Length: 266
Ligand SMILES: [Zn+2]
Image (cartoon, rainbow, N blue to C red):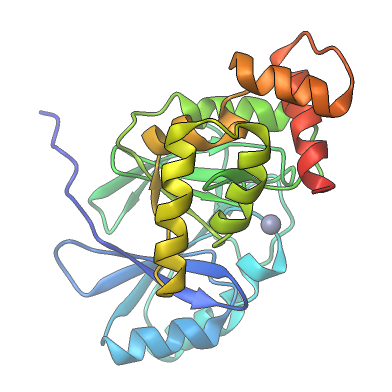
């Protein structure tokens, strides 16, 4: 018998300037898992305030703003003699990973919520994402209206990763690690000034940010409509990129690469 995946709630903890540390709540207990806890103090305050037990840490890639809190959080769990597995990429040198993950593996959070692991080299070479029917935890691979910078991987690797995300069910919630939406949309509007969905979303995002409200999670469906990096096959996007770069582009991954370079210089 296939059991339907239980719905779980997710809370965003604010860290540093614009990071989100995602807390995944067990549907049946006071356990939580933290995704990319770069700042331990923020996490410990949250756990204490809500009387939650840290049951797992999920890491997407090696950057310090994602892994910096692992050690103090593990020390905290050890004091209380609570086990806390640290999931993370196998092809990495992150300290304290206890469950090293590679492509197509599955983990079972709180012994009831499955997540599939997909390797998405691009932003970094070790980057992985955690995905199931309800949610995608994508670290710095995709942002709402944009995507991560290419620090280690190639444009075609990143393009492949984004195409994988684009092919997920439209209702999948996207939990990325930064609130970059407003500035990403400024750039997106230079690529598709007449995209009505983008214009509308931009207004919505402005209203939310004025009130200090998070624009994340996004959804796959929304990103397909407004994120230029998921729209490298659209005629309007190709034409605009060609015009701005003064080059003729043939393959979709070339459009992506040119678009990423435009964004880097925006
Ligand atoms: Zn990063």
